[in-house]
Length: 206
Ligand SMILES: [Zn+2]
View (tube, rainbow, N blue to C red):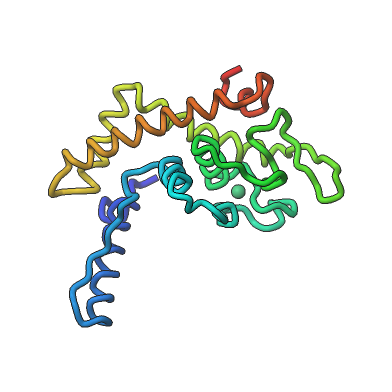
């Protein structure tokens, strides 16, 4: 597969979108505006922790990060196994926030990989769903591992140059900080899992 051009990568596109919004806002308001992104270099776990500390986390569980279709959520708020659901569940856990019982079809903190239906019955995870969970959880673990391998520094250096042409050193420092924080949050999440857990089995940490 051909590599995506540097100016069409998500890191660069996000900056381009912000610049475009500033331009449109300036036209509408007839004055120069500037978008601030105070959470840009924070993990979702850090953002949720801050909200909790400031008493602003009420109702956050109504937000949805699930990318699965409604039919794949089995009547629940989220599927629990896509990338968005896994990141939300891990971040909530490290922030000390509790999600309602039955929030997800599949619970990554539970012992068994079975979906709880509305009628109280439990349905086993299909092979396809297990593949989705393995990919989401594997990426989270792989990302955490970067903090303790030389690859992490190399990747942070490469990405920093794409994010900021003007100050790649600053961007690299922030990216390495994000890697270290994610590593710590992943370790905290893993320590919360039951001794016998389907997630431990998938990520190979019995
Ligand atoms: Zn989901």
